[in-house]
Image (cartoon, rainbow, N blue to C red; front, side):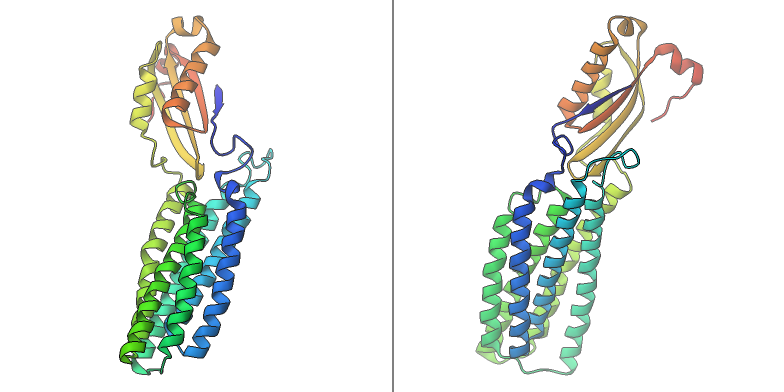
Length: 308
């Protein structure tokens, strides 16, 4: 049996998300500042949309803080009882992030519906100015995390939080302009609903991808059929069974396989053969950790245990 540790997550003793810790700290500071400014602006202007955007900014700060906490835990060294350490904590953080977004959506929708039956006079000018400042701050946050979203579910959640808040700020800006220019107060709850609707696809996508990892489904960028084909093309390989792939955390796929080989291949050098198979898996599919068990042809015939 052999193991191969690739150059991705875990190889350097940490996850991909860990390299973005400072940027996450900056993002938390920005989101926290936006929240305070928007809450004050919402109280002074009477804008529900601004308050909804403030709640969204708060989820940004909380969500990114969860991501940062998960990253810190994930850096802890593995132990005999937790052989993969705390890498999976990052995925649980992404799930909590998604659920938090769902709660915010429900609150925004409920509050906006109430505003239609009981209108509140909103100061459109102040609403517009505060939202404009929020958008500028969110654009800075997006710049900080611009190249992180493809690296990790955790960082993708943080990026999507800030992106959604930026789009929410745009909705508030438009609503503020409409009220300022026309006096149409319904623009405020409508902008609030738009903010709520912006949350739904982000929450769904983040929750779907997180559950994909927690259910130990095959990594989305790893085709087990192609893995099998590449292994079978290696000299001396007769069959491949018990082939499984899953993800420990973002950027850390794991693969196990039982590879049936000829007696001649085993006799020519166990280590050379195993190294060849590990390089095949690591080189073609960038698998961070692979475990390959070599079996002689007769072994499969005796136990009849041909599986996936």
